[in-house]
Image (cartoon, rainbow, N blue to C red; front, top):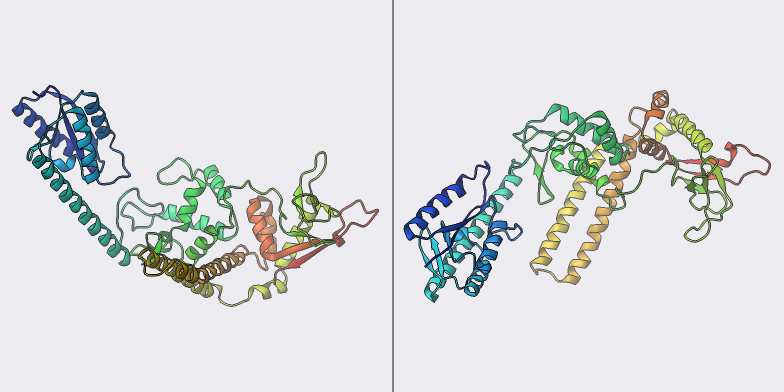
Length: 465
């Protein structure tokens, strides 16, 4: 005699969140229990949870197993057997739990399975295998469909709408598109992601589904090929998309090159010194480091000792040097020499070519990995073929990253007065990018004994050529 029966109901996909599917299952299971005279002790419901995916836990199913082990439950009713299992290994585990608890009563609305005999278990295994094949077939069809949609540049999938586009995922949202263009321009100009996020938060600019921007979220948005009007599939570019681009495909490629550079550190504290990394010692050639100074102005110095290769004999006061270098950079912006340096051909075309080469090399690297995965080539062959491809990828990324240097100077070459008016309001990362775009580095010579003031004769800028 059954003393305490359990009803288990599950539905994999409940898009509307109404739980109607599981409600119908429970209703039919209750009717079966009444016909059998089985008293219902508990109902276990996993709504919108797949049994096929091993990555998703089914909390109510696990609770059912625990209650069977403890003897609380001595019979199980389901609508159809594959609601309980779609993985053969789970079915075997279920058998083991039932055997240990002495349960032999398993009923389904669409047909009974008697766990007490081998024929019943054999039938359960067949039904489980059929259900697994159905899931595999469905998964294969879905994957193939997504591949076709991707190659055609079509929208696929649901979820929250992407920032910059309306709910149809095709129509550009003008206000959000303006935010994306601003962020893209600032990154191409050399500004850091964290600086942009702080500015957006201060201005009350919010993402689509959160209260505030997070640096990683903004970085993912700017690295997405979607905003460049391109279609991605499993991280690879597969062609142009059906929706309108928010930024150019060339700028999108440059953003991905900059933001995916492994040298780029996104978790470091903001640098507080304008000329950090740009100064060299005139005595030994070592890079000068920035140091705060208790009770006095900060300095740049040639550090010696453990971890440093400098001579320790050169230092210069930071505020005076930074002001002098800034003036020199602004003067340089109005010079014919800088204009001549920047007249180096059509950079947009060159960037597009580099972006195309980069995409091809990344695709070739993926194909190479797939060939190794299918055992078409050996490990040694994979390693040998991978190295030149990775070298080309690294070269293309560096070239695209360098091209962003001219973007930071847009509108300022020959118009230094405009930049001079804005300089104090610019973020430090933007100021650093402008200085780096104009000056490769500066050599700091030794101090002259007796001169206790800033001496510009010690400073020798080396301009970019």
